[in-house]
Length: 256
Length: 193
Image (cartoon, rainbow over all chains, first blue to last red; front, side, top):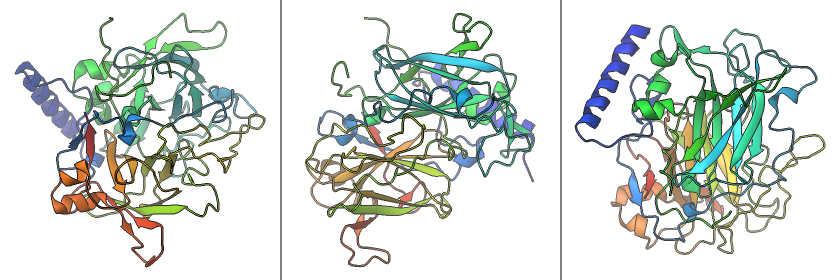
């Protein structure tokens, strides 16, 4: 029998209470989601049960302390504007999403690839296996790429995605979000994440968002409406900075 | 110095990345027809032993000369049409990206890594249900190695690709490397400190 939202709500609350109690008792803050977060059913058979094996980052020959390089041959100047990839205008609320890509020391990560993908304004992905009966937008695919500039800044012009249902439990709806894939200067800084929009009423019901049990960490996934980023007669502005984790010993060529 | 910013949490890649992240030639790091090209292939399995059809694998490795600097051009584009041109067939970028197929299978075509010590290809696993990506290594040879030597034998074996296995008997330069996310034969996953 399919689980109801209230079944999932109870599990989410139990996990949240257990985490909050652990932190109050001195346990470390978890900036990343739990790998075995039961309310998100797909995690059950897909999380390793053995502990991760530590690799010391002290050896500069460790391959993962360097990372892939992307340049002007990998993207075109139109890739960051998702609204101009087809003949007509996509439907929905046009917006500019911009922010900085930083490392844990607050240094800009320059010239690195930022990729996004998302549903359209009706909450449907341009993906063959996506069967949500919302309309496809012939003028919107929902894929963008850019390279960060010298200040680590990225910027996309796109359409605000809609929320959509999914099969985790009865009446599961995902809050609107944009998927981000980013690289740092080291392969160990690789990150895939999702950006959310402020004040979404679905936040509390969503086991994917709630898998980040630390409340402050969860709030870092929510963009800020930024009126200065809004463009007159054109788009609403959202600001969202991304901070890459990575080993403290990450080896970086200064200025790269 | 300013206060250290806190990291952005990881999130699952979800099932619907397929129209966005895979790119033509993502699996072909080796220039076409290169005489030294090798293949690394295998399946990704979940804890029930079922193939994972919606995993995405990132590969990163040293160049054959040992260089770790990489090169742009993995997803080379045509600036006039915006289409994919693919790799230029000359530069070795060190980076590959492969989605698993409906049977949970992937295949990567590359050149032998020339890193110091045992040659290995670094793998980053994403999938629906993985709230945080997983790092592992596909070693192309067995021998003395600080990481491998720290593991019990049966776990060590999960990081060493087998040459010529699975219907490619005797096929030089074909390596089998399966990834098991959970359960019996669970792959060793790494945490960099």
